[in-house]
Length: 124
Image (cartoon, rainbow, N blue to C red; front, top):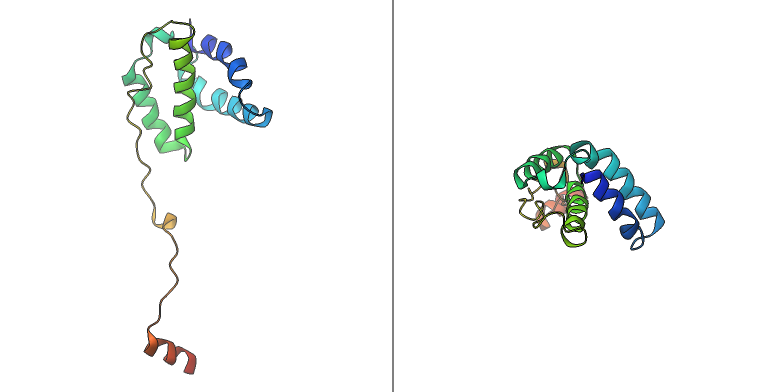
């Protein structure tokens, strides 16, 4: 069974657990960002190494890459627990990269004036 077939079987169950608006957003994410990498692969041929490679690509391309990992993991977990197609979910062992903060992401800290600087500022 391919990843896309598992996804199609999983979708109605997932849809019953979320609001319609959430479902539509997640369908768009899956079809745009996940299926291009997994759709024609047989689930028993998806390795942790392959999943890690894709996770690393997502990490460099998407701010919310954790959502992509989570959705992929849920679909594969359905193949493990419900469909019994594979014994282990290959996404479980993936190491999730940490997003490094960029300079612009740092929290703004207002300038602090000591008493002398404040007095000088108010006089000028």
